Length: 330
Image 1 (cartoon, rainbow, N blue to C red):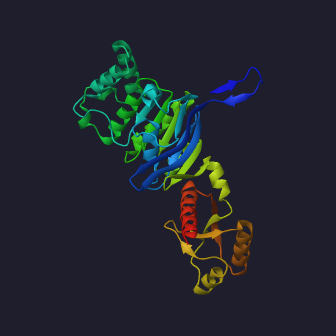
Image 2: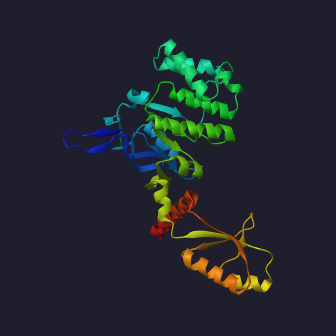
Image 3: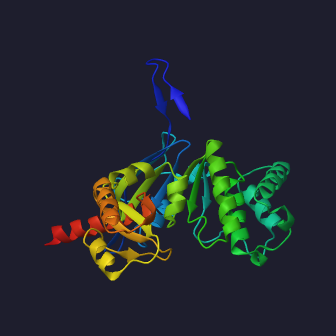
C-alpha cells in the first residue's frame, strides 16, 4: 500500500512490521542478538539461515510466543505492541513449523473452531471456509479427519486456518518443507496471489530457489544476527564478479589436447557432460578457450555462463561471517 502525504505531496510506503533490538537468551545462549528490520505492506520477505540461526525464535518473539527482553520493541502498522502483543493477534495469520490443527477434528470442524476463536459469525465462517477450501483444493476433504490427511493436505489446511480471519500479515514457518511437488506449486502460487491482494508475508525457508523466485527481500541470519538484508537480485549482483562457465566438446579429445586445455581451465565434468570452471574474467577466459580450441582442433559444441545463484551467495556470506568471527577471536 502507498500513502500520499497531503502536506508534502510525497509518496511513502506503509511499514507493516517494525522490530527494534530483538534479543532472546536461553541461559548462556543468545539465540537472537539485537535484530532489527522493517517490512513494508505488500512485501514478501524471506528469512534464511542455517539451522540454529534464530529464524524461528525471531518469529516467536514477533508473535508473542516468547516475551521480549531488554529494550526490544515491535510496531504493527505504526502501533507499538511491545507490551500488549495479544491485542494485535488478529493482524497475524500464522502457519507454524508444527501444525496447530486438531488431529481428531475434521477439516471443517477445525475451521469452525478457529473462526469461533476470532469471534466470526457462523454464517461468515461457513462462507469463508468454503471459499478457502475451494482455493486450496480441499473441498472434497472437508469432512475427513485431519489425522488422515497427507502432509501436503495438512499444510494446505494450516494456511486455510491462517487466512480464515482475513489478517493483513501472514507469517509462514517453512510452508513448503517436505511437501509433494503438486502441493508446493499450489502453495507458492497461492502465496504470490495473496501478495497481489495486498497481504504482507514473512517466510522462513531453507529453499533457496523458493526465496529467489518469491521474495522481494531476503534477510540472512547467522548465529542470531542479520548479516544481509537485500533483494535477491541485489544479493546476486554483489557476487557476480565470479562466473561459472560450462562447455561441451564435440567428440573425444586426445590426452595431449586435454593437457593443453588444462593449462587455461581446470577440466572438471558435471553429470550432464559439461566441463565446468569458475572465472573472475569471463570474457578473457572464454576468448582464450576458443582461441586455444581453434589452434588445437578442439570443437566446442556448447557453452553457457551460469548466473550466480542465491544459494552460492548464501554459502559465501555464511562462510565470510564465520571467517570474520574467527579473525576477531584471534
